Length: 334
Image (cartoon, rainbow, N blue to C red; front, side):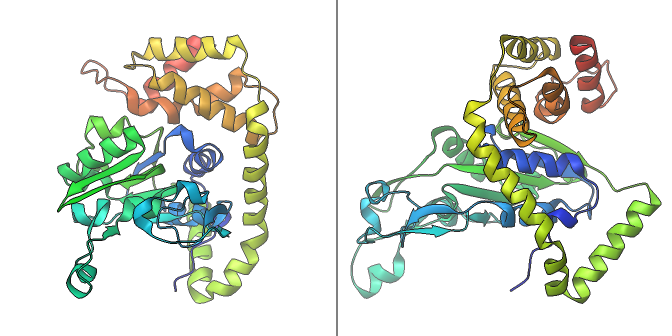
């Protein structure tokens, strides 16, 4: 079993790390899209954050990680009533995956050997109450994208095929990574991500040296390297757990709501998803930093990752999305 690289040992990429931490604090933010060059630590960071996630309480043996026996679907059979703590599920959705593997299908083995019609749950069932990670998300086949859009919207997976009529909860944080040189993401799926992060290779030579040093130490002796960084990872995990508890008590002044709305109007973002994401992300940041209310500084800090992927294309403006958001933030927030 390959040991995940420690989250706290990742050099630089502060924006990406912060985005992943904030979605761990509030999954309702809507997930993270990480776009950038090859070899910039995108997949490493996503797999590392799994080690920081607090455990969940779930029914033992339930295929959809139900919190209570009443929430466990009938088709799961007898799973008992024992509640156990288990790691937050982080499920990889590979390229070229079939629809049956994603949504689930008829259990052929049981049908042939026992003559019983049973449901074999898919990746969406495994990812319920956890994370669904898609590497190279921009290369995902269109019919799988459409399927994910439907489930992300409803929070429920519906399977009507082969004589089966199955429903089960499928609420997960969608995390995608990709290289923009290999193709753009469909706008419908792009809008489903709460936050968007652009990562680049470090240009500072000392930072690059530190990346090489840590990666080499990890590959030479993974167990020793993990032990060295275990304490730092534990600190972040405790901050996430504390932020989750205090977040419902974070005050949201009318001034903060006004700032969110004014920013989105100035940027011309469609719908109200931008404002809601901006507000939720700012609240999670305030909780993580130990503040008692959302301030303009919190909104300023997270505006680029919450709004850069919601901009309309402007053929007369050659500036990148981050630059455009920065200009508007400076104009609106001062």
